[in-house]
Length: 405
Image (cartoon, rainbow, N blue to C red; front, side, top):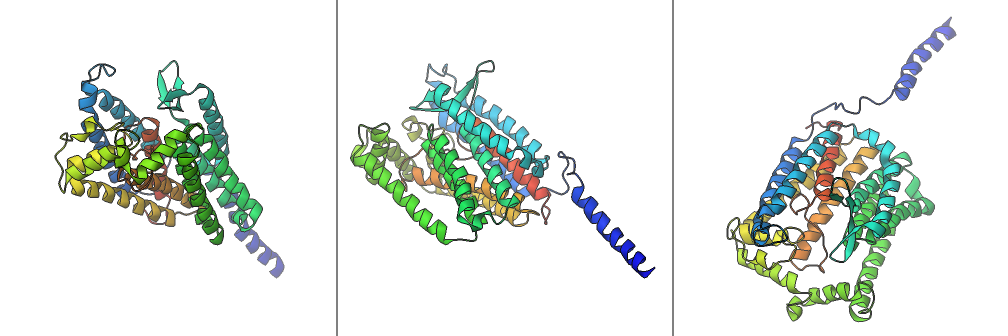
């Protein structure tokens, strides 16, 4: 009797455990907690500020351009529509259980590689590179490299969370680095700048999940040395190679932009003039003088216009908002209930932080010129929707975190 009763108690204890383990995930469109309202509010402020600055930086140019039908609202209208779509994407993803994203990680990764390869052959060319695919019926362009960044985040988070010891040995480490490298190479076929961001995201996620720091010190030194060697070669020995004159010229202009003010140093010089003329409080919204000289003023160098119109104080407040966003994102990662959610949050924050840092560094001539837009602020279609959709994923992770709100 004693043996049978104890066996019964063990059965009653084990059976709920087994049922809980086999229980399906909850409704994918149902959250269980309160999302991080600070991130939600900061993203809305950044998106609205971006709409205002896109209009402020572009209305003079488009109002005088026959290509834009003399429409001062040309970029405002398009950016506003994409901001609305981004807001919808953010709210959908905020209410979609992020744990289901594991199922789409590898298919999305492979699909992204296919789209990037397709872009190389049939992509729409602009400024010497092919980055966009045109959807014929809708007459809409989208940028596969933006989707590729999200795919890389999801696939790395899935692999690293499924096998936590995969980075303990070299084969697993090389496999994960290979996933990052393949994606970065495919992205680099159309956009070297985005490939750098992709490598930073993947390398950062592997670093956060790996117990071996020495490998990353060696890899980091090798990567920085390789990049400097590549730029040096392009600047002094590859003027006739594809992209050699362009990338080499940018590297030389970074060292002394005023030595080539009408060439590769033009954009940097105008950016520095804009920052200097803004002073402490700026010239006022819409009062920028340098925006009529700056190329891609509504896109990659919009931070220079912000500095000119809002001054050091306005630029500082903007960077403070990004700092709050990054801080809250890291807090969500630390309070995630599982490794997959923590790594996805880390990847998203790495994507935002790296773009902000590189964009500001380029505009201030701290690093060589490269085309990286500022998240939520620069004019963009796919980039804006993807960024806001990623914020929705981050918000959903916060709803399932150990600390709600």
